[in-house]
Image (cartoon, rainbow, N blue to C red):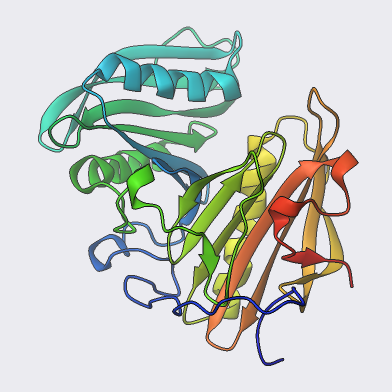
Length: 314
């Protein structure tokens, strides 16, 4: 193929993805690469990123506010929407981050948890969330969830939280709506934003378009390396499935991603408006790799406009 594109009409050419700050291990700044090795970035919004690092997930949100309480409330809502229930317990306190104590909470999701932060029996998860200053008029919301409340993962949580508190986004991109690359694009073509949808993340390496009942997300890195591409796909699918309560088993089905043969991971999850279908795949072309996912209501099958023609059936 001369170009990597699933569309038939010609599209404007855009500059290639810059290799600056991008490595086979992930698109991280040089000083962050060792610490974030094995982590997969997931763009939540223009102001927020989640990094899935094996058995833990860590997030960073930067907002223009001076209210620590508002930022902590956002993190509390994020955790309780996922784990809320009688097994969820938290203990407020402080964490020493970036050289200062900041308000935080230690939480656990354990059977018969008594509220103690050191509970270790029959636990599904544990972790921390906090809020720190990011400069005049800006705050950073931070959090980390460790699978099974495992102590080694909790220790790594604290290392990652310290970096995020001190340095911000490990990818080097500024977080905020004014930093979005518009129109959103893949290295080989521009993308459309359907009416009623919003771009929640857009850089030369990653992006996400969100609609009321659907979304399309992508990550690009270079140079391509097959083992890393597989890792990104597996981590990305695991993050999607874990974030959707009640999701069904993941199927592997043949598909095409940007016109190239691929193996798609597909699963469904229940919602109040009907089953949500999730497609995800990764492919390589020349020196680049692409991981993409598209989720939408089953009634919109096979693929709605927000998917931008990236996925197709063989």
